[in-house]
Amino acid sequence: MAVTNFVRSIVLCTIAALLATTAGSLAQADESVNVLKVSPAKNQVAPVITALAIQPGGHLLASGGDDHVVRIWDTETGKVVYSLDGHTDWVRDALFTSDGKTLITAGDDGRVITWDATQKMRRSYLLSLAHPVHAIDITPDDSHVAVVGFKTAIHIVDIATGLTKREIKAPHHDLCAVAISHGGRMFAVACGDGHVHIHRWDDGKRLRELHGHKRRIKTLAFMPHAQRLLSAGEDRTVRVWDINSSTAVQVLRPGRCKIASLAVTSRDKIIVGTSDNTIHVFDGQTGRELDVLNGHTGTVAALTIDNSRLFSAGFDTTIREWSLDAVDGEVAAKQTENATR
Image (cartoon, rainbow, N blue to C red; front, side, top):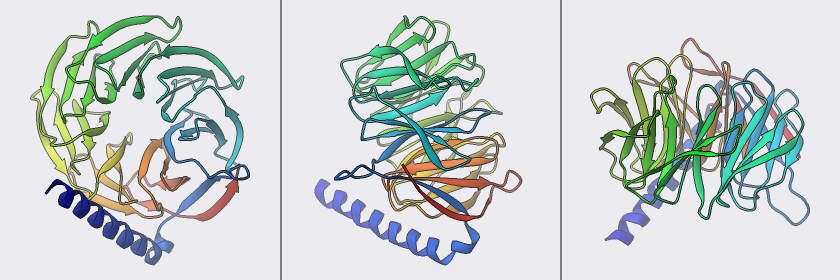
């Protein structure tokens, strides 16, 4: 039965991906995307991209994936301006500090690395763990980073000193995602068993546990203008949680396939990347689906957003830039493709 269900899931996802690709071709004039591609070295293939971060207030974009390299792109030219070597395994997450000067990356090699984005060099190894790191998040004041991975420990690390401020024991060995609230008073950790744990930042105390997902959670995000948390993953749903009541006030269903990535705009638009190669845009207040963005030909594994642009990347080895209309959540368009290195 388990094998049958697994095969059925793959068939449904494949059909959905084909339909999405067809829809994308028919609606080509209505969608606008700027496509960035890595030109691999001879006898190599382009990397799958699972980490993406836009520089706040700047024009740099960081990407990382299964070739262990962190690439820095100039979003104005669509070209890679330099690469950073230091990881020895798959790069899973990347974030800039709010001033745009420091980039932090993490991956399956257990390393959490800080990079000087202005000097184009590695600054320090914040952590070198004996297990893969799945996700990181930075406090609003850029002072600490929360780190989770394939072990029952949540690491809170001082970015300036590299010292571990706190190591919090978690109830599950597979910690898939972490998100710090916009006020910095709490943080959430998602587990492989489908549960979300809310912790107080000051002492790490677990405040509550959220139940609702039936499978592994892949991603978390706090909404900017409400006490609400988003969680999504392999059960094909996005749950919008009211933190105070610990209840899911909305359940969004962007298709039949798994959810791999989330982003939230400053105007509460929820952006969802899925395994059927599409990106779904929802109104965060009403839960209404506003748009479906077609163009990717593989799972959309990473999303990053600034005030006017959405960048997406994934298993098709491309990065796509979308122009977001902040008024109605639709995507306006332009058709360009740059083959870059």
